[in-house]
Length: 127
Image 1 (cartoon, one colour):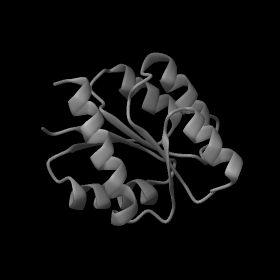
Image 2 (cartoon, helix red, strand yellow; image 1 turned 180 degrees about the vertical axis):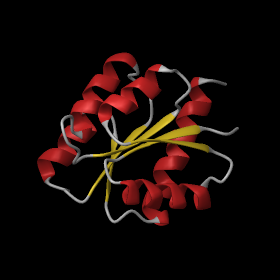
Image 3 (cartoon, one colour; image 1 turned 90 degrees about the horizontal axis):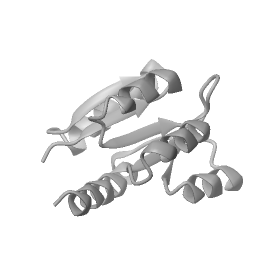
């Protein structure tokens, strides 16, 4: 079953890199992009997003604040925060919000386990 993945990053280049990895790992999954949290929340509220990949460092609303808002409406949605900023506090807050933390630079082998787990979680939730 194909999934729809939302890639959120204020950098177009970063979104392109994530999309390239996603296309290699899960070519049948759909990809949607957002450049900021406001765009992302609108897409998520549209209702057909399965998995979210969000950058931590973004203007206005950072990735953890977005994740906090997301959890209010979608507590079980698989989410990964992707960032080069791997400070212990950021990683701990990410995990406290029931999300994965994946350190940049993003690679196939660091994203693959998250995607496999997210797909399994969604299969269990919607048999």
